[in-house]
Length: 259
Image 1 (tube, rainbow, N blue to C red):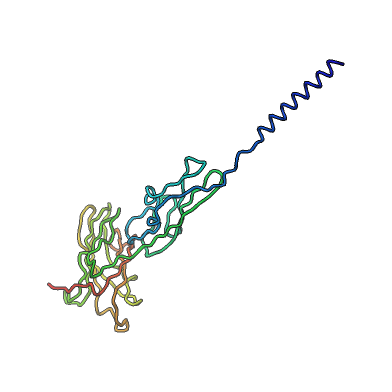
Image 2 (cartoon, one colour):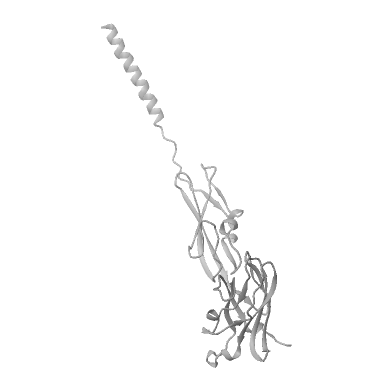
């Protein structure tokens, strides 16, 4: 009987110790409810640049954004933006069109707390103006293209506007740069544009000339102050353009043509 009593007592003590230990293990840690902090200057959140310039948002924000968290020491962020312009995997922005769009920088900790910062991107057309008659139109992997002149007068017996591009070809194919016939307009009236049919050899720099004839601008167009067009890039003669850079040619920037 004595042994039975001792066994029961021992079991009770062991059970009590086990329960006490379990109670201590069940004790919960304080829950993380604090979101990460994104540090970035406000000025970096408004991005504005010309069409035709290369823009990669991952590279742009790389040295401008810092993320910290009260618990997680190693925390990163993600960039999201309008998928019509932003390629999520590479980080590249399509600068082929005049556009304004917004995006977000988002950081999430392991508990799921999330914070974000909104940014905006504005892509402007290249403008040939009195203050900037010879802008760089494009400087990227395909070429460097610069406006050499924008003139008006009687050229080779025809009254016309003439724009000349200096083209440094960085491709493995011959390259053409021209104003498109189906995407040049004055006061929303589509007009024809022409160019000297030649191409720039890979690795070389040359000049391409484009024309808009006065006789193709009807009186119904009325008074106009600018010509809306694109600098189109194509690989071979007659091939469809693969890159188009929006341009505005301000008429008051034109220089008189002289032989």
